[in-house]
Length: 275
Length: 275
Image 1: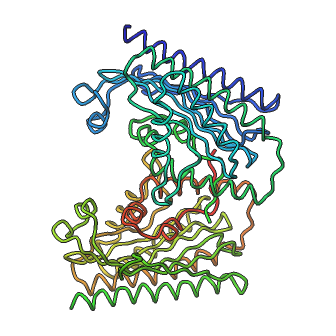
Image 2 (image 1 turned 120 degrees about the horizontal axis):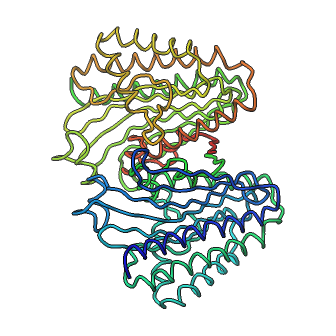
């Protein structure tokens, strides 16, 4: 398949998913809370694409949720070119993706993160994943999440779940705290074996994420919580901010390549506390 | 002067300053709020020194203030040795310092940071500085701070203030936000020209910091503030956390060399918000 068609199909999917998920979230919220949307351009001088991020704050379910779509192209700096596969000889790149972080009002409902992207340098690959960060343990929820992710992975390749779960556990880890960010999920990168199969996997993950966040939220968003539990959530969010600012590659990649700061740091929690 | 005497004099000074400043803070707080102290060891197996950090929370003036003293020695990892002056051939090091971050209850009173340290590898040097981060502009305060710091610097060398002020402005800068952390102060490192003169400068900075924080606090801690101003403070603290986790060399140095995580991350604000 022509690479331009691949790019188009991938970015169209990410855009469609942004709309679908924002619709779901607004439905969950009822009529009162709506997304605010903002578009941005990578360059002020020439056309290097850009993105649209949508944010909803102080909802009855979502304390803060950001849904980012972007489609950019340009040249990597020399420093970046060395780090990115396929870019050392030719610094031109194209990238599109969707990234979502949900910070919930009810401390019983975990924070949920999802992102998928397609990057093209001299070759193209998919990356992404989803992971869940509760602040109050719930073994049933953990088991539900991993069972559903395993089912989804198994539809594509029986080896995926084990590999991508491990990747996720290793990635979302705070070495200085010697603790994981949450209860994991799946994470993958440099996925480039068979474009059509890879794309199917990526779309399936998007749909599975949609089912998962709806199910997790529906089950618990009305559960009563205490001030003490809310405090535990604030402290856990401090850890979330630590991870994203100290270690997250996406955050660093975005800030180093001149991405939109508001969009990149939308992943940060609305309120965090440190003891 | 023998290097062991230099180390002893420097660490004794930092320890003395920790006591003096904690006394000042408890006096400002009145009888209700007291410091909690915690000691830690760098190694559980052998003697590699350690430190004592003291923290006071929810005071009438200080929302959170940490006063860290440490005196450690050991071997740098290969990776660290390459980055630290004088350590590439011999990885042995000794370091002692004091580090203070004050997060205030009243949003009219700025956050204040101070630290001084003496590091010895194959040679020894001083580093440190102090800087001030208001969330509500006060040009009088800014002028007072810089006038006093200039006076102090001028007592030692007429060239110091300009040089160290610039160093501070460049260091405490958030490139992704294109903004400074606060209104600056002074910052210096690799100070090793004349040990006795350098030590006098470092002790003078400690005493000047003591005078400055007392003056700044006395003047404004009873000033009335609004909920809106408190919100502005929370957002500014989000920037503070961004700086410390994304860029601060001390934080990265500490986390990479196995320092005490609680002590290192004591600099983080008690509550931060992101829009």
